[in-house]
Length: 110
Image (cartoon, rainbow, N blue to C red; front, side, top):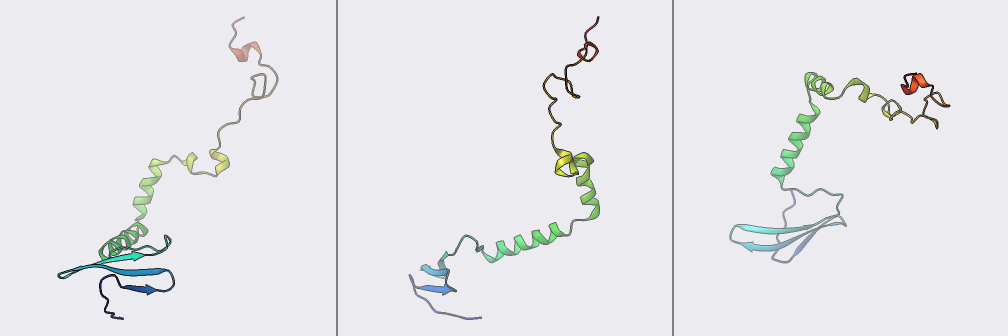
């Protein structure tokens, strides 16, 4: 572990993109400002460890847990995108096979 001494308003660079600045010192507390690109996650260690633990638990989902999820999604919805696509609209004329519908198709009682 590298140990550095810094005073208020002094900065430490990590690589070319991360700056750590000592913002304030009061008693036994040090306030630190961190400037880093958005693609670099910055967390307090206890938060980082909690996220890591939750990710491990999520990756170890039991088969029964995954099967229970299947009950939430009917089999037909878990198919390919083409199978999930809405039904095509009937062609002009209103009959699915094309052309116009017969009186029986329209429900006419003649």
